[in-house]
Amino acid sequence: MPELPEVETTIRYLTSKVKGKKIISISKSQKKLRKNLNFDDFESISQRKIISVERFAKYIVIRLDNDNYLLVHLGMSGRLKFYLNKNYKKEKHDHVVLQFDNFKIVFNDPRRFGMFFRLEDLEKVKIFFDNYGTDLLSNKIKIKDIYEKFTSKKVSLKQALLDQSLLVGIGNIYANEALFHSKLSPLRLTSSLNLAELTKLISSCKFVLKLSLKNGGSSINDYKSPDGTLGSFQRLFKVYQKKHVIFKKKSYKIKKIVQNGRSTFFSPALQK
DNA sequence: CGGTAGACCTGACCGC
DNA sequence: TGCGGTCAGGTCTACC
Image (cartoon, rainbow, N blue to C red; front, side, top):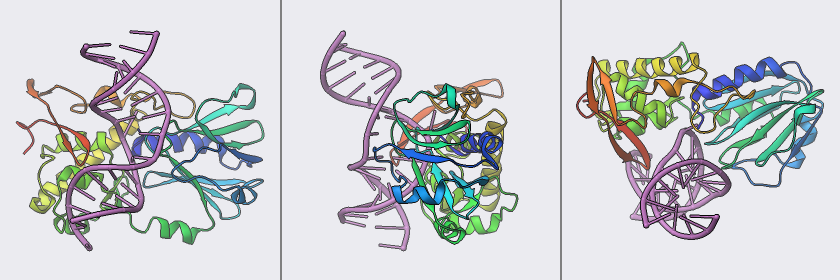
């Protein structure tokens, strides 16, 4: 589910609800997540105020007033949901509940690929994100550095876009959409790109991410922002799960292949 | 070291 | 109605 636009959408909403608010108590389910809070974490979290909610890679990073951090990753099916106390009734797959004064933030995740854990200071956070690449929504993208990283690898462009140590924020849907927008083939090798092509690819990534953000992310099956609002970017998909694409008033066939276990959709005629 | 299958899970959907 | 197969937005690991 959630790629960068969905994570950003969640964060923007969350910030408006929890910034400056105090966590009264925490509870968690017994079910195993990729990473889950320990009971020892509870005392470092409860009675703490939330200073900020920010994004690092596809993680939601919540800073507390004792410089502890809560890291949340939505995995494939995770959501953070907002409930006024009186509206909450426990649902299947609710795994973590943060209790505030008159509302709750609930981490719900059917497939449990998500993560919810604590890091005890900023240093730990920095170390955790040490290996991540350039954030595509950052204003300080250095094309030359990325070009070096790309050309020193010999993997398909599709795989490279999913590799968060190269570029941060693209997932399977947006990889397909960005490659189509750039008219580059997902099968091309990173080592074959020239600087102009990489520049085009990155600007296409930024374009699809920003467009999606503007539309509140994509709602496929189950993604919703914490208040239940649906995103609408899925209506703008050009190739993902499509059979044909219209380009300059002509229709082109979309081919579906599998690369590294993930579905790739592209137009062999238009993407070279 | 680099690269690639497989693992981790539940649920929705499709064909029989 | 039920059952089996396939597929899904993302990382990790184990192994060559």
